[in-house]
Image (cartoon, rainbow, N blue to C red; front, side):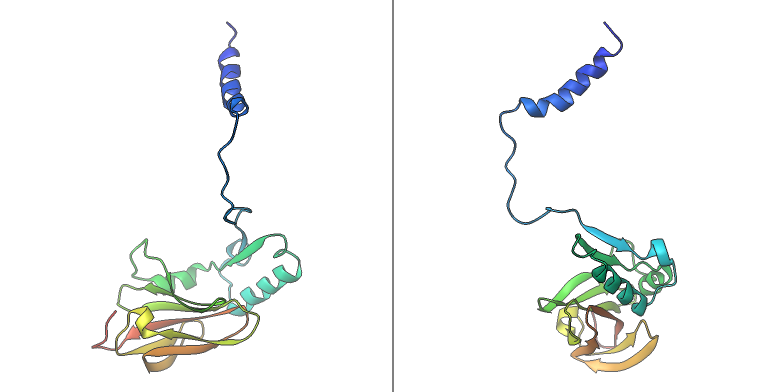
Length: 185
């Protein structure tokens, strides 16, 4: 017996087994996984020099360059210093969750932080500048809370029941919401 026989037998079993069957498993026609998720990661190009304006410009360039039509759907914002500031003290594995979707192109995401505050993202996927509101009820916050804009590093103020901001077209606003003593998450 040749030393190549076991390898040829394995190849025949692997590649020939599928052809020997009379039928294949049916595919679901549910619209999922027709194309692989395709996107672009900012870290590979900009490293730590990321800003909201730079990400918006990059997304616009991807659209005008035809990448959206080619199947690209995501721009991953990956800035380690920003991520570290937002998630400091948060146990590993805790990730943001969609908590509100007031309209098809508007979303509110929230991530609990170790100190009881929350990182909150107001996302506008529409082509128009829009006011997006995050309700305390959806965030699990009671009473009033302090709001801090994480990109401008400025305090917005104390709010009761909700926070809203004007979010640019295809834009994001990110804040930290900290319940005032007596309120909770």
